[in-house]
Image 1 (cartoon, helix red, strand yellow):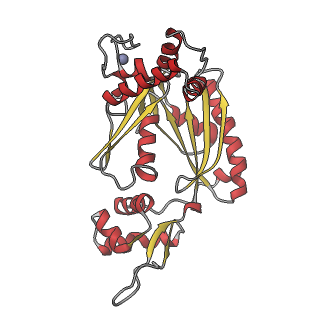
Image 2 (spheres, protein in one colour; image 1 turned 135 degrees about the vertical axis):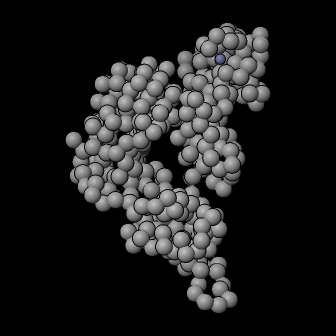
Image 3 (tube, helix red, strand yellow; image 1 turned 45 degrees about the horizontal axis):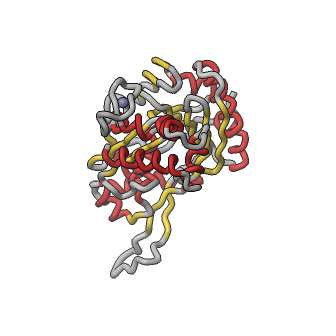
Length: 319
Ligand SMILES: [Zn+2]
């Protein structure tokens, strides 16, 4: 069962119209902004902005402050509108093949708490039990903030249908057609959204990170695999697997090591964590049992580890 902080779902976010949702998102990712600048960036009229901002201020999602920089020549001072990050809390989970990571964040994506737990069983039923336990723990701690937790976001690697909330195929979890959003809501009592992990990270960078204010950028992730997210003309480009830019399987060395996809010399076969560990082992270097150990070896100047990383860096760059 969900704790009291999740139980009251009657209070709804007052973004009833597409314009209101767009304005809120613009302030969230680019604020604080004056109403005039907000109208310009959202491509809406000043009247539409004023109309949409009012209920958001009344409900406490937006606040306005006097702009210390503004020196109006005439009329009212141009106040800045910003999102009150403390107005609502969210839970975020990331599921990998062997771990579950959980965070409690505020409305502006600032992490208030972070937890992780090992996953010993990848079957959906076992993962959901671990999900419920982690959510329960985070909700209990969230009670201390006195602010409602309004939703749960879950990131999973693989082919994820965000609209349907279904994990179509996740190789790391060995899942096919798992209606994760629905199942997570059933065990936690929270509205849940499910997305591909790289796509979720790309949106996070676009709204709150290195991509703020940029219309075009790429996010490259390197770990158990090599992934890529793209933002083009301000939109996250989603491909067949929820992400764009299959950088992991671009061939950069036709004579390179075999890849699990069947080709040779893919970026992933050279630069992903298992490839780096294999390279150090094959070169006869010091034993690295984990990627943390490999990083430590490279930092300590181990020639084999440094060569493996240099090769990985070149493969990613070419990809
Ligand atoms: Zn490949």
